[in-house]
Length: 201
Image (tube, rainbow, N blue to C red):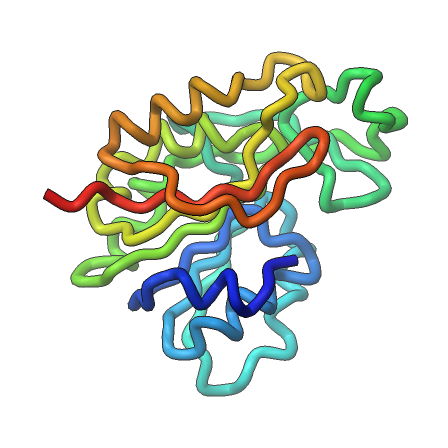
């Protein structure tokens, strides 16, 4: 959960993209951007339930896809706590039992999925995808040129998921796209909520 005083540090944007929505959504973020169009992306169609209490005048789209660096298909591991669902397998250090379900899902890149949705927009992006954040950024280079901030839950303990990126790899990819770390919203044993902003020339 993000605090109001943290979200107030983020610039206002025309379109807010929430990647890794979950069935409860990220309501504190939606409330902080009441005028922004919402683009919600989650491979579990059940996550569309978070829209049921949206105001009638709220503009939003929900896309039931996974995101990655290239199109294709992948197996999604779905756990009893659906918020922990991941395309990666958990290591023992993550204290997870075997997934309740493995579901085959379609993967798209963010650039291809939202191209027609963001024409003329300024963008804010939130990513929480249990270890797949780097792959998503790799498929988002065009979208990032219009993006004012990226709020990402990133892994800083790369042993928690099998094959997950290391933190410096994520930082390097953000730098390649012209972004710099500006805020740390939280830091926990495995994860940290980091804010990246574009470097203004």
